[in-house]
Length: 433
Ligand SMILES: *[C@@H]1O[C@H](CO)[C@@H](O)[C@H](O)[C@H]1NC(C)=O
Ligand SMILES: *[C@@H]1O[C@H](CO)[C@@H](O)[C@H](O)[C@H]1NC(C)=O
Image 1: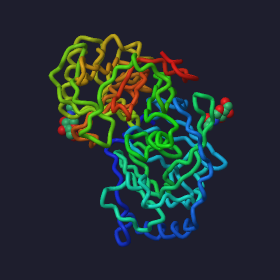
Image 2: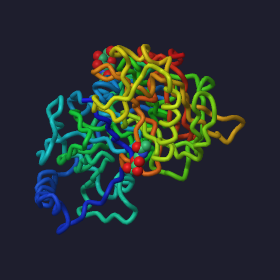
Image 3: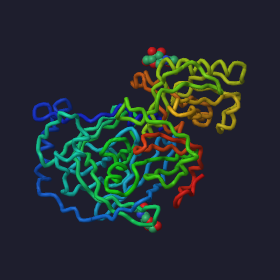
Image 4: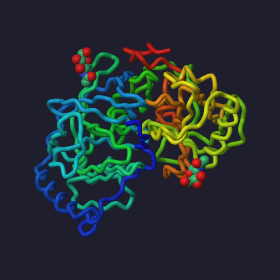
């Protein structure tokens, strides 16, 4: 419990090496299983039955469950299949593919809250653009009627499977219920990462064509906008479309184009206690698949020396007797809530030149970077990204996005945020803020 996870970052989809190489490294089951799968699935695909009327200017709002600590992740329930069944998925803005643990049969699946997804026969063919979007440009189909995938996550976890189409059931804010056919991965071979957590799968919300919001957009159902509001009390909501916020109240900054895969902003500067720090040109990624936030080694070093300087003379001393996080402090008595300690810690922020008239600041108050451990110490929820294998990337994770609406507008290519009450999902347009 409480272990940080970095789900989406540095994700990439690799070509499943054909024949000899396939699965060799992990004991040689892969190739056989794939063939078995292929046989089992080889009957022709189910006709796509539901023609959905495009519902213009409506959105989808889904409640979120979980928290940063002690649960360590947020999750959303989606209803998938025919008849539809519920699944708990990890919403990940750092990756594109949505997949479920799948009884294909399952080679290796991890413990999950619901029975594994039973695949239908509606395979996504290899030539489908969605398949191409998940692979390198030079990907060669091993068998034209199916699209194999493998996703590797930054924490060492992975999912391997095949793409198929199935019905997703959503309630729109307009009141309409829609059942679009969307592509998802039937993951029949999962390896848990370091920060393994027991869910039915991942909800890919990245920028790519295969992401759920992009698929919904292509069917004319919502604008290609995804956002989330993570409550510091736990829970919150996730949304697709642009109906649940008032754009004029959001601080917007352009998405960086140089890093295609992830939601990132232009280069940022670390602001500490309202003052510039000279820690500049920070490459920043927004990743809901990560519980904690990360700064690269240089910036992290600078940040913790500023923090420690600030704590000089305060009744806090560093403690090593809480191993859930690397940097913690104890007071004279155990702390119960952040309120007991927030007077000792300053706000920090990331400031982005938004290319327009002003700078966009992403404020991070003590509540959004500190955690009270089970032992009553206060621990830093910002970690050394270089140590975690993120190289130079700075990553804004769930902890720092709490009590804010964070919006990824893929059509306008902007990222926006605003303080918000995330405790009650909005029922229809403009209910929030
Ligand atoms: C949609 O709304 C109905 C009625 O409020 C509810 O019973 C159902 O569970 C909802 N379905 C989904 C997929 O959220
Ligand atoms: C951060 O991690 C890097 C790489 O492991 C290490 O060299 C550096 O000392 C770490 N910085 C701090 C302040 O712990």
